[in-house]
Image (cartoon, rainbow, N blue to C red; front, side):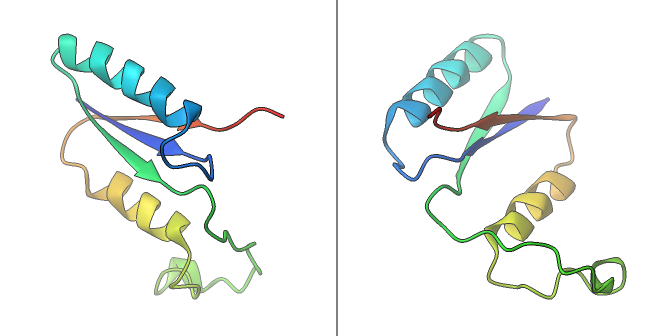
Length: 88
């Protein structure tokens, strides 16, 4: 099993990352691998409903959401996803 964690905080090394690392240490102690994907602070585009995603993939090649989804789909193991974000 693998866990893909998304850090939605714009502070790559802030409290959200520290919390995800703590979760990661616990997972590793149980023999579960993990990866933290830093997305916070980068632009995320809204879907424009063009329908191209079903044929060729998203038309917005510069959106890291697409990279995150690709990582999730490429996993050869069972995959869990954890989302981490700042609270306001």
